[in-house]
Length: 335
Length: 286
Image (tube, rainbow over all chains, first blue to last red; front, side, top):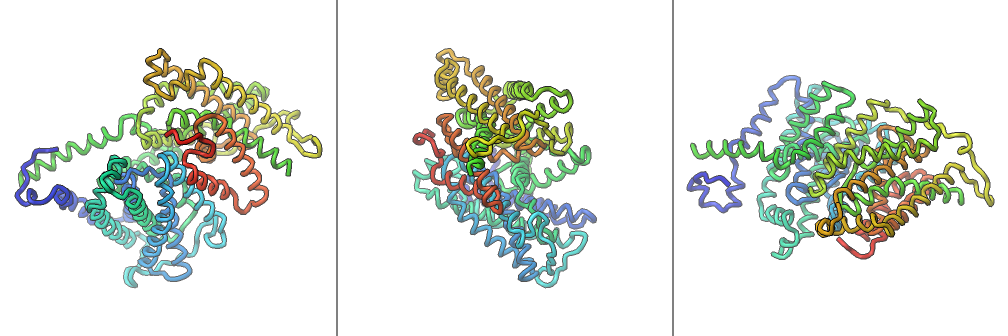
């Protein structure tokens, strides 16, 4: 820990509360994201990044804060996408309604399957999460009458947001919309992880037995955060469905679960910004590599993963974070 | 009916040979290796290349596939895998997914994305009627080879010095090291043999399962099911699980094709719920 002199205001706050205080780099981050709206011609890719960021954020809630390794997070993402898509086709074109419905469906599935991930070892959890996403893939594939099967869900006409903001071809509305949703959900997640609930999650992650011994209801907390995370992932899926106006089986793909894991690992788990930062880096990495070798970019992605693990994730993250923290504390002290 | 049962048994035996290496690395050494299918794919490709380009007889391809996969497994174990035995499960997952991606892209680059065609020799094709049951000759061959392998493996693990060294090294590496067992060597040899068996399985199954670059991902879940459902206390568990899985898959696809792989995933989840340690585990050791 740094020995930076605390301002009198911070000294009065409890450690938890001071950690929850907003610092200006955070504001900078969001301002930069907002300023990106001024970039012309980039909104489609920025929209993808925002959605990926939200998806990674949802994974961060369970992996970074509760220590649950999931190989099937795409299950919730895909569910959200299909719910939003079907709702748009059969009920109403209002996007916000789709988001709420997707979040609800994701939460229900998350709650139902949350009890499954409580059991057994890491391996069992991996298998169960993977199994659930494969199961949903099969359902979406077989129920072709409802989902369009392998052809995907066509004919979505998404209405304007709140009846005002029409989606455009350049993705400007889409990016603004996804960014707004990401920001709001981020605020909520931030509130959650700094609450006593979030602190108890960290206790469970670090030592489950000890957390149970001091009276934390481990099972309930884990199911709770799993449900929340599932709802987040479903919202990310719904955003993708609405902004691209198309849903295909690809939303349940294993690749998606693996990619989001990679995004989070690049950004670093357990401090909420890992998802957004990782999403930006991942997209640039993807663009850069697929520019070099269009067809075989997954080879270099794999090589990157292997290298990342061999060098050590912690070392890599610390290598970036420590100079950053030093910089921050210096600026903070000079204020 | 009996034919389906027979095909299911052949398929299950094949799955066991493919997955038994994984049941040692994952089950006994507690290393989550999602890249196991990559070794099987390698075996399949070795067979396909040898047979189509050099007209090597099928029976010579099988040991070649074993050796190739074992050699690659050994090199990878020595250079990369061994550094990760002590790491967290998340690290192991990320690492092995990375290997899978690399293997798939490399296969695509070298061999193209289309399915490889294996021309079995004439005497292995066709069916014979035995007691009114249609039996594919090739499937019968698979059953024979795999049964021999199963018996040999069980024998090696249970009755040889190497087997007891391996069990000791897995149970308590420190104590085993203290007793003069070269744990590293034992692990490396085990990993190599496991990879080699996967390669052999890939070669044997090339005609049934098909060989293409998506092989490692397509069958990853099957291998994992065999190991997790079978439990990790012995080879018997995974063997029974593989047989069950093979029969259920073949029967499911024949009788209720609309459900596809649905049945298997559901059964897996239910089994893992009721018995997180696996269907055939003796008590919870972990």
